[in-house]
Amino acid sequence: AGWAARARSPQALAYTQHTNTHMRASACLSYAQRGPLFSRLQPAVPPAEEWARHGGELASELCGGAAATAAAPEELGTAAAARIFHLYLPLYFWCLGRARQAPTGRAVGIGISAPQGCGKTTLVDTLVGRFAADGLVCAAASFDDFYLTHEAQRELAAAHPTNRLLELRGNAGSHDVALGTATLRALLDREAEVAVPRYDKAAHGGRGNRAPEEAWHVQRDPVDVLLFEGWMAGFAPAGDAARLAGLDPDLALVDSFLRGYAEWHDKMDAWAVIGIDDLSHVCAWRTQAEQAMAAAGRPGMDDASVADFVSRYLPAYRAYLPALYTAAQAGGVGGKPTLLARVDGSRRVVPTAELGAPSG
Image (cartoon, rainbow, N blue to C red; front, side, top):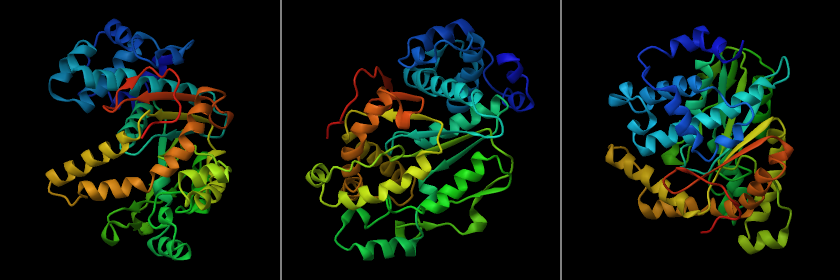
């Protein structure tokens, strides 16, 4: 069995068409070894050929053009090479190791906690593709999928009219926890034909609404791996009323709602955490995204609106990220195996050192 057997699976062969087959295995492994996450793959480091195979496929998929004939990571450019060989592939190989340890008859659940704007969607899409290339069925779900309906969110806000953090979707309390729990259970139990909700963020003038059921994604096949991502994934209730009040007087209610999310977190078998040391990155990344939307002719928020939008999340980041990072660097989030990757303002992985409360 081993790596070669997976590479010959039908799903894997489908990913080898029109991809880079020029990557030198030794060059790929050498470049990967210089990344901050490489040591976390010990002792089961994938062979050089796997770094080259997956790296070549990702280079063609994400970079295109000259990447199709690149023979070494450096030829992709610093940013692309680092993203592929220092973040995407180390994280994928680490997740693959968790999948190998999954109990028979159940999918492995991997929670992915990452701040808004850091590239969660691309990261998760990339991981799903890598699992498929190795012949495994991977499904992805997001905390966003389980936001309350527009009407239910309005009712929540009306019930707490002075709480700014619950006025709009996003914080704990604005999700349908029961719907999420049932969906996660079905996916992890490897049921077929599982309907996964979708959320339309553009509905109602940008306030959003759950998409009609006919627009939901149906996971046809039983899954081997479930990736469950969210900006507040892994957050644990603080329970310190005085500290929470000092950060934001509206946090106490959010903290009480957060207790219910243990139903989701407990279903995860492992965690990957993308960490930051400066919360200003979140606002900068969101501003970049809105400016890109405007440049593409799509409606987007101006800088002031972005600042107001992000400000509704900052209290929760300040309240819960320190404990999340402490857990990730100690016994693991929820006591589960955890990989922590720290990124800078350019979304590049940097040495983690000691990651505590982010500034800003």
